[in-house]
Length: 465
Image (cartoon, rainbow, N blue to C red; front, side, top):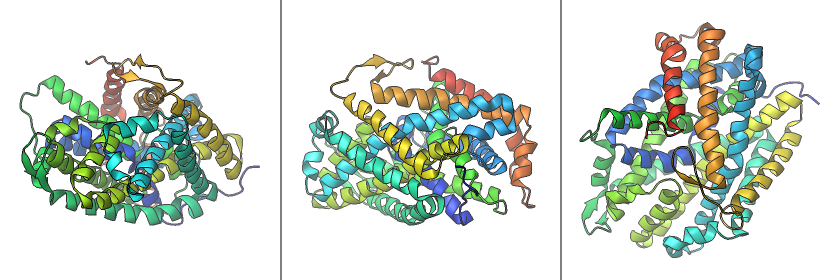
């Protein structure tokens, strides 16, 4: 049965916190610091900030406006704007469907490490074999996946106001305080790294903030730009249906431009703080080479070693750190599941409870297969971008490197050339608000963003290596 009235966020503040919570996830915490260290520190930061207020802003305001205008999730919203673009809604719905199973598995890994630090097993967690031993076991990862996924389903089952908004209003302020606290602590550190060199947290901060253009060619700069663009998908949760679904819950009288600006500021601040939180710590205790770890390696191998090197204080900091990451993972997984559930409700007129439970069961089933991909179902193939992959990596590659750029390109074409930018501008300004950066938005959505996205898509196939 179709719900009589669409749910909505009770306040503009609730929407901003929910949207920011969606963006502040594992991608920001383990991906942003690695990319910043790899791509010249301040060089990456400058390019990222420029792209955030141009490229990222364009995609974010477009999706939120589409959601509020149509009062539909991504699966049906695109077709309402233009029937020839129904396929975009289907592809956009596949993105969260592919992401949710493996995201909750990684959330389960975070939960495992949090429990290890709480129960006093934190010294073992710093051993190289701890992470590999855990993910290759046949039962334990599935159990932790079930717990994390269950918590995610419970929140979405409770609804927009009682679930997403209520949890976000609690977790996001706590999350921000913990991130700021750990960042300040990281700057006070001093120690001797694995290379025998004594360093301080401020030395690590210099590695992070000071641009390094030495030896960088035009191709190198282009790679930094592509990395920063790819990171923006994680940082603002676009091209995966989330912001369209959340936008559909925003009341008509809300100031959309003000909300988008606040989300931009919050997301960019947290992304930058993630680097301040991690890079100085790793540089102090492992040297600059320690930032060579990426993805799970940075989170589950490098950081536990850092905490172990801190001595007795490392356990306390480790507990706070993994609790913070756990909160960030939960707020993001909530939004991913909500995009799926909202789509099922709009497309098939299912109730929220039915959609939440069915998708939860499907995600767990896929998650079991992904977990077994590290043991009984293990295999290794080369992706088009040259990286080694098994089941989790394949799902991540298809969703993030192919489907998301395709959705973003199609969104720019739809808004820029089919229904015209005026569709979004009118929605944003319908209560008399001003559309800041309107001229920039029109140029970006019509020309610059699609071209950049095409390069990003081609890069995912390794064409620029």
